[in-house]
Length: 239
Image (cartoon, rainbow, N blue to C red; front, side, top):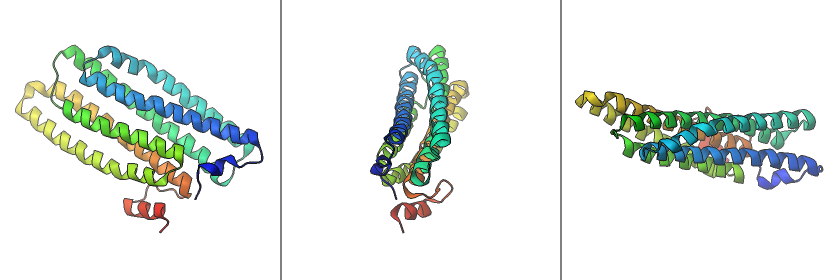
């Protein structure tokens, strides 16, 4: 098991600085992505096409951050040849940036739907569900990043557990919206757009879960990504 302090005890202070810098860059990228999730949902609900366009424009910045962090990780691997917990840290960062970039892609999709719905001029059903599930997945992203910042496997486990709740609520919302479309065929086009937004939010939750699983790997040294919840809980608790 490792903690935050485990990464500040190298003989080389330069190595310490390199590890801390790449970790801080990951968390900065995560903070930007979390804001994108929030802004994309607000843009949709408030019919703010200007904010939606801003979300789309930031996607290039997120992609650039992913490339830069990848390059940092490759340099550290090549120059330092890290072992044990340091190697797990670099692997966890390099995999987490992939999930963060994909969250950015999903927020761009939501922003695109928001612009389309603004142009249609009528708020369809499903906005209550979008706000609710949007708040949930934004919190998942935030807590997954907090767990990474604090090397907190217990918090990471709670993110994984909460993903089950989001999946369940997504399926419930989907059934309700499909029923509504059957009752009012005129709404099909608009409600389908909302369903795609909910699908993007559900995927964002999946990516937050992946990051949380990487935190558990980082702290405990076991790859838990394909474990069931019970085995994952036992791993975190050291049982």
